[in-house]
Image (cartoon, rainbow, N blue to C red; front, side):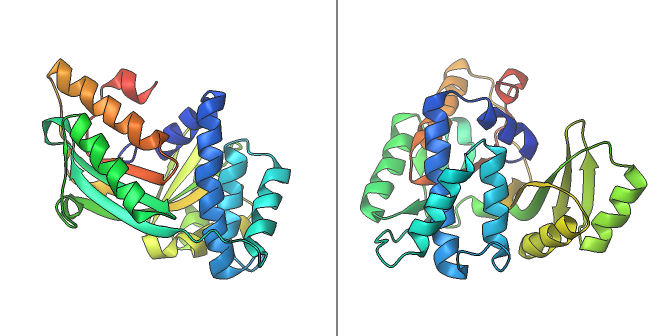
Length: 247
């Protein structure tokens, strides 16, 4: 979940069971379809597509599957037209939640999202009801192959990044949300391997839940949202228990 290490989120997905892997494939496939239609099927000329291919590979999606999605999206016979929708609301205990979707049926998606909030002790709100508590930030995750910190700092700032954080397996680079594509491109040119490059919503404050029922309901809400094929990203300001983060 956003507000925590992006790599931790990716790692959880990589270790997911086969059913969840299928969901991830569906979600990334929709993103690829949209950016191919927007910018073309050649990742050399479509940086957003290049970033999504890197994200797909980080989630162990086979190259053949990626190529198939790109070719389908580029073909005239592809009738899939996905629309971006964003929903805001509160989960159990007043946790702020933002849900980003790509859907070919707005009524179905809106009904599903509202049902999840109602079922698990929350309520769906109006546009802007919680987004003011979040700031959009760009995050580029790189493979860490024993890089020298001074060299990483020099390269990141040359690429236009704002900050970076070196972890055992990865380097997390922060930048302005509109600079994600440019920063990831420059870092690729400098020899780094991109794991993911995307904008995310980072909360300015966090909500801690102590009530056992609220803890359970909040977890069930997030699970239900992430299992829905139409839902691409879920952001929240829940200060999750440590065992939840490492799950």
